Amino acid sequence: MKKPVVLIGFMGSGKSSIGKQVALLCGREFIDLDQRIVLETSMSIPQIFAEQGEPYFRQLERSILQKSLEQADTIIATGGGVVLQEANRLLLQRTSWVFNLITSPAAIFQRLCKDRSRPLLLDATGQVSYERVEAIWRERQPYYRWAPWQIVNEGRSKEEVVEEIVQLIRLNVVFDSSTTEEG
Image 1 (cartoon, rainbow, N blue to C red):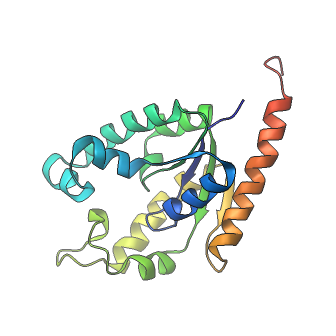
Image 2 (cartoon, one colour):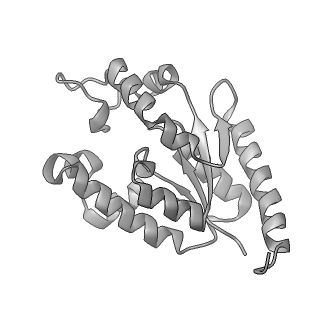
């Protein structure tokens, strides 16, 4: 039985771009959780944060995550904060294979320094702040380390990262399909 494959990691760690390639190579549907939220609400993520607040966004994120996990033949790129809620981690653990894309705060800052669409990273002047990136990154590390598979996504080509994930998926599909319900 196939399970959804879920990519977690900090904002800007490459979950969407890598997820699309993995899905293509594995013949699975790609789901970007943040894009699904935008489609369902007809609002941008910054707009949801500004008008409804982060708690509302996290409830919406959980609901759409649950729906997305019902589709077994998928690769799902989550938002960076999806693992902050214990209920989400338990749901992911029970239903999917979870890969964390490891990227340093310096690399994240370099990738996102001009991106104004990530409200949690913006300082009072509306600029991405390295200090905010690093503080949030440090705060979230225990949640990202929870994932069974840790994939370094820095200092390597996108193709190398994609190939590593594809190989792990293929190994697990073989292993998973050979196990029985009884154990």
